[in-house]
Image (cartoon, rainbow, N blue to C red):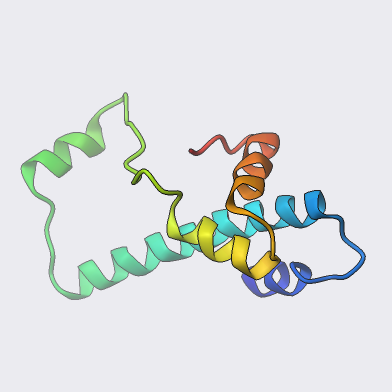
Length: 100
């Protein structure tokens, strides 16, 4: 799916808003892939969760842990689609993935 979204990002017949929506979907996919990669690397290194991390995982009111700047996948998707990061954030909001 990532390959498809990346190739769709630069289609000439898409408006900026359409490219932004595509970039938002691409950012979600890239974020999921990065999360899987980090988990795989952690397991390979024999990493274990701290008691605080385990408690946080079991918590019902999980807060998103993001930096002030948008996550790296959104930045990367915006550059690929040649739209602003703000457009990608707006695209996520429209699609229902209300991440900062």
